[in-house]
Amino acid sequence: MTEIEYKIYIDDVIRRVETARLKVSDHHIVKIVAISKYSTAKEIEKLYKIGQRAYGENKIQDLKAKKQELEEYPLEWHFVGNLQKNKINNFLDIHPALFHSLDSLELAQELQKKLEARGISLDALLQINSAKEESKHGVMPESACGIYAQITKECPNIHLKGVMSIGAHSEDKTIIKKSFDTTYEIYKSLKGATICSMGMSGDFELAIECGSNMVRLGSVMFNK
Ligand SMILES: *Cc1c(COP(=O)(O)O)cnc(C)c1O
Image (cartoon, rainbow, N blue to C red; front, side):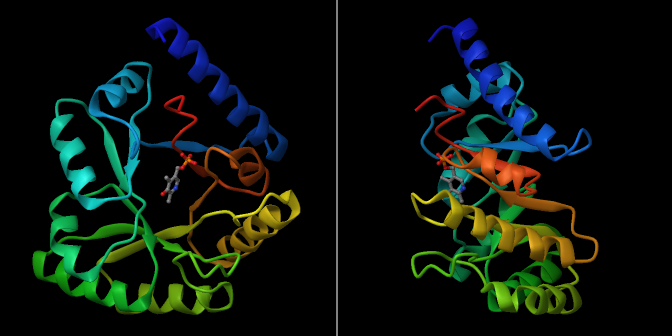
């Protein structure tokens, strides 16, 4: 794909986001985080040149390598993967813009200790296992509000900004919608939450229609 062809292609993706968000309201703004886990630094550079600034990775070592490789550009780096406790120091060294996948109180407490010791803070989202799937990380929907409040209270160096969820793994749109509705309900009930991160390449329009204001788009942004 030439640069022009790629730009036209991305315009179409943005048009799809626009159409979905306008079904919610003129004022419903949606941010795209381009998930670059299957893409190279060169490919990220191409996308940056047509205007995309926020990127996300799901592995600490990849986040670190790509951030370093692309440090000449003013990119914003998000982390969307599972964070193991023994990787917290490596993770904090990278200073990510937003941690989407805080998935337990225990992890929050470990993070709090390290953040406090460093005298820094971290913006994060509480990940919700909205369809209660064995294969997924995240807190159960019924405990989400309680855990959110507890983290807010006990972990002053973690600034919770809202929630993140991965749509139900299903071919059935009503089941996927239900998982997004569950997440959105929790989001709406949280005081001060401003980010509802849900929707990936295969389901972002539905996620936006259900209230998402941050979509994590991998394959569709890189045309894979
Ligand atoms: C890989 C990944 C995405 C993007 O997936 P696509 O289907 O390629 O858009 C979004 N969120 C998380 C947490 C991911 O791991």
